[in-house]
Length: 308
Image (cartoon, rainbow, N blue to C red):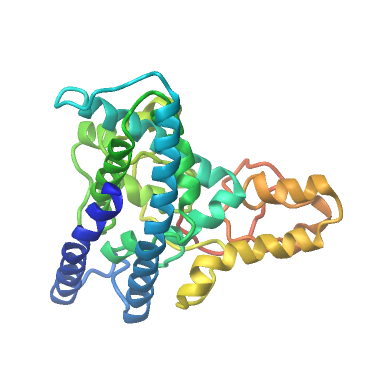
């Protein structure tokens, strides 16, 4: 449970930094920054508080599964000052694929879309996390099978999440290019939360950007990002924020007449729909970039998507 306890202990610091950023915005307004609104910030904090509660349940289930797999494998990785950085590196590698998958598979996107649902981009956005985060833990099964102690897996997950808090701000510009290409920065993460053009589905890394460099998903911030969803949900109700895409999936499944269509509504790309229902797609998907396949939803409107 190191992951949960680490984040819980950090919660007061998160709130303090959010308040300080709000004050800074008030004292030094910036019309080019998305800034804060009371309702949006309250919604983010409410969603984050709920995520913190349900996360205890999910981490308990994940810990039990990791322990079972750890006991089954003959492999063992001793956690030392030398091996722990390597374990963290491995965890960050699997985080990249977890994050990327949650943008490419709709039933996973239904969970992750919560984090991208705000039209604002500030420190409070970082705590707007899903209430259905168990799917994320599946991607760390290889670490348990490799003999990494379960507590170390969860601890590395907590560290990874903590390092991403500072990324959610407009007030830190681009850092020197070598730094931007190696580690995750506010500039790189703004790209991840943006919708336009080549920004879509980019910069999935948690701590490092080297995975995006290796697998062709890195993009540099050039123009000002637009935040939100292609089909914005227009609500500050925490229950709707965390459930709206699951509801959309339910509607699409109910309308589907073929099993293969039902399967693709679940595991296909977010926004997929049968050609005959092109005008009725109900997903809240990022904007579709030029040249995308014709089987994706093409809602008009601004969106800034892309993590947790």
